[in-house]
Image (cartoon, rainbow, N blue to C red; front, side):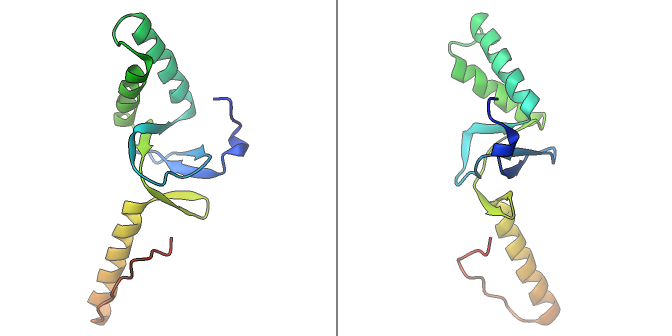
Amino acid sequence: MNVSIKDLPYAYYLPSGAPVCVAECPKEDDFSSFFCRYDTAKEIEINANAMVDGGYFPDFDAAVLMQNMEATSAMKCMPYVETRLYMGFCVPAAAVQALTEATSAAVSAHTGITVRRKTKHFI
């Protein structure tokens, strides 16, 4: 990684709950691109090169993708998921939707008022 963390102003959370600093939040799902822990990203590159050199994979990109998927199951990486920027954090769009629905249901249950959600999110 040749970029300084100070140049990566946003936090993107991995399945482990640990954040990594990123240059921008993903605007759409891309399950072939990943954010990883800093040490894991370097490890993936080394392992992918070894897999190609050893003849286990025909090309580097395929080896990297496989390594990223394995690291995701170990909670060290996370594919790009659509997010919204909120106070320096990349918040998954699915979480915003779930929170909106849960809040609407709670208001309805406690007040009897049906909350109609607008299509625009505040986040």
